[in-house]
Each structure stands twice: as C-alpha cells, then as structure tokens.
Amino acid sequence: MKSDISTKFNICIVEDDPWYGQLLQYQLSLNPDYTVKLYSLGKEFFEAVQEKPDVITIDFSLPDISGDKLLKKILRHFPGVPVIVISAQSKIATAVELLKLGATDYLVKDEYTKELLWNAIQKIRETSALKQQVQHLERQLQDKYSFNKLLKGNSPAVLRTFDLMERAAQTPVNVSINGETGTGKELVAKAIHMNSERQKGPFVALNMAAIPGELVESELFGHEKGAFTGAISRKIGKFEEANNGTLFLDEIGELHPNVQSKLLRVLQERELQRVGGSEKIKLNVRLVTATHKNLAEETKKGSFREDLYYRIIGLPIVLPPLRDRQMDIILLGKHFLDEFCKAYQKPSMSIAPTAHEKLISYDYPGNVRELKTIIELAAVLSNSREIQPEDILFPPAAKNNGLLAEEKTLREYTCTIIRHHLDKYENNVPLVAKKLDIGRSTIYKMIQDGEF
Ligand SMILES: Nc1ncnc2c1ncn2[C@@H]1O[C@H](COP(=O)(O)OP(=O)(O)OP(=O)(O)O)[C@@H](O)[C@H]1O
Image (cartoon, rainbow, N blue to C red; front, side, top):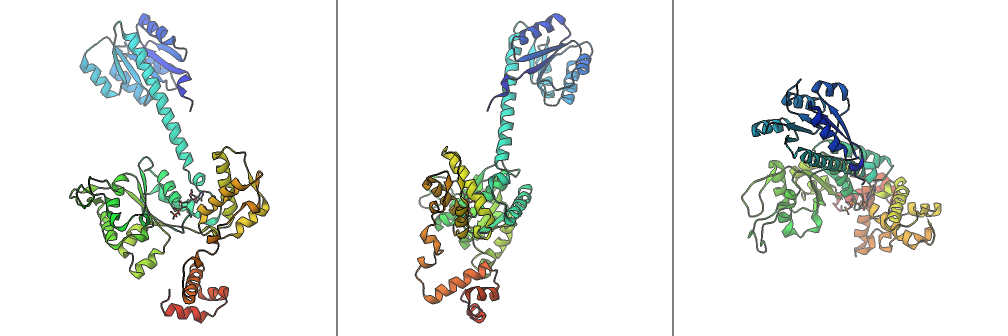
C-alpha cells in the first residue's frame, strides 16, 4: 500500500515572538511536504483555522491565553490532534502537567529547539501514516470478511444464513451450526468471528473427531507438567488459546461423555482448570459448535448430554446440502473457477451451458468442498477457456453415496436407504413410501421395530 507520507502535512505554529515564529516556520518549510502557517495569538489561530491541522505547536506564554488553557481548548476543538508545547520554562512539573493534559511533546526553547521540533514532527508524521495504514488494512480485512464476500450463494437458504450470521455477529451468543461435511460450517464460524467485536481476538478451530479420545481433554483444557505420562511440559488448551476470541468446535457430537461433563462445567462457570492443575483460569470465549449429526436425536438416544445440548445450541444455523440448493451450484462453480484462474495467473475461464447441466445433475455428497475440487480439476483438464462436460469428472466412489462401500445385509441396506429418505423428506412417511415405491406399513413396521 502507498504510504500517505507523501501528501501535504499541515502544521500550525502559534507563537507571539515574530522573529522566533518565522524562524520555526522557515525551518519547517524546508520540507516541501509541509505547509506551515504562523499565528501570533490563540484567538487569531481559532478564527483562522477551521479544519483540523496535522500538528500544532504552541508557545506556552502567549499574551492572550495561558499554555494549559490553549492546549485544553485546542484538544476540545480538534480531538486527537498532536500538540507540541514550546516553552522558555524548563520546569519539569510544568512539562509533566501539560503532557498529562494531552500534549504530545514539550520542548524547551533553546539553541536545539529547531532540530528537536523537526524530529518530533517527523515522528508524528510517521506515526500518523502508520495509523492510517492500519485503519486502511482493517477496512480491507473487514471487507474481505464481509459475509457475501466470503460465502457465495443466492439461494433463499444462504440468504437466510447471512441474516442469522449478522445477528450472531452482533451478540456474544453461542452459535451451533448443523450441516453435512463440506457445507461451509467452518467458513460460517470464521465469518461470524471476523464480523464480531472479537475480530481482533483469536479464532481457534478444533475438530473433535480428529483427536484421539485420551487427548481430547488436554487439547481442550490444557494440562500441567506431569499431569499424565507423556505430559513433559505445561500445555495451553484451545479454550485458553481462544480467550477473548472465538473457539470453533467441529464435530461436537463426537465428544466423549466424560469430556461432555467437563465442557458443561467450564461453560457454566466460565473458567477452567488445566488437567492436573488447581489454578482457576477465567475465560471469555465465544463458542461456535458444528455437527453433521442431529444433536437433539443424540440427546434422546442418550449419547449427548441434554444439559450440554441446551448450553451450546444458542443460535442455531442450518446449512443445507448443496444438492438442496441447486441454484448455488453454478454461482459457486464460477466463483471457484475465478479463484483458480487468479491463483494460477491464468486468463479467466467460463463454464459451457452443457457443462452447467452436468454440474447440476450430480448430488455432491462432499458438498461445496467437492464442487470446488471438481471445478479445479476441470480447469486443469480443459483445453480451452470454456469448461466442457467432458472436463467435469465425478468421483466414482461418491456416485453411490458410499452406500456399497460397506458390506451389509440386504435388510441393513434397505434400512440405510429408508433412513436416508426419511431424513431427506423430514420423516414424511407417505412421501418416502411413494418415492421408494414400497408400502407405508413396511416403513412403520421398521420404525416400530426400532430399526432406525
Ligand atoms: N458458500 C460458500 N462460498 C464459498 N466457499 C464455500 C462456501 N461454502 C463452503 N465453501 C468452501 O468449501 C470448503 C469447505 O468448507 P468448510 O471447511 O467450511 O466446510 P465444513 O462444513 O466445515 O466441512 P467439515 O464438516 O468437513 O469440516 C472450503 O474451501 C470453503 O471455503
């Protein structure tokens, strides 16, 4: 980014000694980037200056107003403006008092003042350029993380998700996200964090299914040295790492019951003790959880604590599978294609209408993540700047939704297929019976027998 250091920098000098004032004005004007104006009285300065200058230097003993009063008045009129006080007095107490009131610097009038002033202004200028850069980067970051920049989609389901994310970002409430693998749960969690007031704090993600059972507690809450065999030093857990930020716990449904109780305690008490430790550590963490499971069902089955479920459910966001929001497929496909071309500095590409049809015909068990992979592969395979149907390859194993990957009895296969349809059609038994061309009673009987 171009630094603002090259733009004109407006300096005002308030000094009643004309000779000394002109000397400072001349000295500072040697820098072609500076515009320097001289005023002999406080009153004159306030009458002439409407816009906030970049720096003001004031003489401590002006005929019309005392240095401390002028400083206060300037800071009221132009909050945040750097003010350098120049004084014949070298009394430390005066300097301290003025610095306390908000002066940026205090210089004693002597043979070195010119040089000291030059350096002080240079420093202020660099600091203000840095501040502007930081603000610019913060705005860029904010923009980068705005919801519709991060998440692509036009379907009513995605628009509803944006609305919920907005609400979640504005409050400290816990958020629970439900969706199949690759639907964008982590992306949603991150976008909420980046748009919340915790954005400057850490975003820490942990997948519960990816950690061996015996290490979960230590990963979450940390441990003290010697807490168990292998604990050779103290370890900070993810909760502590996420303090003042957001902790995203993916696959929360996989949490072992013992850890569920400890998690509940930590959430209730907002403090934790590391494994093997006694110190209580205060927490200020927003929790975002995600699962592909139906947690309400899991509580009924007894595999997930009901009290914990109510603690973490907070604001629930459901991300539907990609096959249920077909209108997003092409939009997302084009988005990933553009991203791919940009990343590999290739000329932009498009997707042929016949390839659109092929893309829409597939059911994406891996959801958005899978679409992204398919598009990237198509871009690599394509011989032109337009993706053709033959460039689009669907993974063979995924075609049958993994159903045949496991060895099952015919009864078990039947059960899996019916369960899948019941989930898809919200337990509408007559509809599922019609779709599968079987009798309703078959389904009711299986439900009655507890087969699901
Ligand atoms: N709406 C979307 N717009 C743009 N990219 C998306 C969208 N949804 C998902 N993605 C992308 O798809 C990939 C998978 O998303 P993410 O990791 O958030 O899914 P997930 O639901 O957390 O998956 P899992 O449950 O397997 O961890 C990421 O590369 C993400 O950037």
